Length: 263
Ligand code: DGL
Image (tube, rainbow, N blue to C red; front, side, top):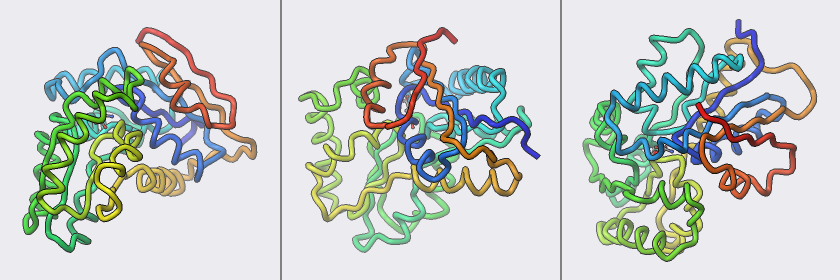
């Protein structure tokens, strides 16, 4: 039985707030603490050992705040560290990894694209999933080098962003992809820009909603849903610039506590 009533989230920065936004839609009574380890972003360039150490640090911060469950709201940390976290700590962990399976099942052109970090694309978990579900199709893998840094510095609409996206997506279009998997939680914030480039014929797969449903399912299974009837309490901690969190969550109509703190 899960006792405390806070769900913890962590990411290398602000990307995982895209999952948090989905989650509060379907679980509005849950209290959450979100940790943005922006000072250490991007995780995608780090070694597996470094990603594990950072994930442990984030987990322990959230456990000290009394979290009952942790959402690893980062593909890079999930694919490199979640099995280690599950072995080491006793609470449930929910992760996010590139949605290869639905893309492989539905593609008509037999070509799908994936945009993810180097840390995710080179992980063992990604290799196993690709082998299991996508061995009969062509997967155009592209590292989104530089995208996380531009998002973290609030340059979503910049020319640099536009140029990088065109550079990464045009080869995929030439390869005739019909599905594009977003394998990094930060990239959800680029969906409008990506659509402008690839048009409506390519379906974008973003796993935020699926992860939120999984959070609900595990809480129900563990009888851990919060029984309060009021809107949840939402806290955010960043060890760098909190302006970007304010900006990305500007449309949220609830009270948010957003703090800068070293961790
Ligand atoms: N949001 C992280 C992910 O989903 C970004 C990784 C990074 O910091 O490079 O992979």
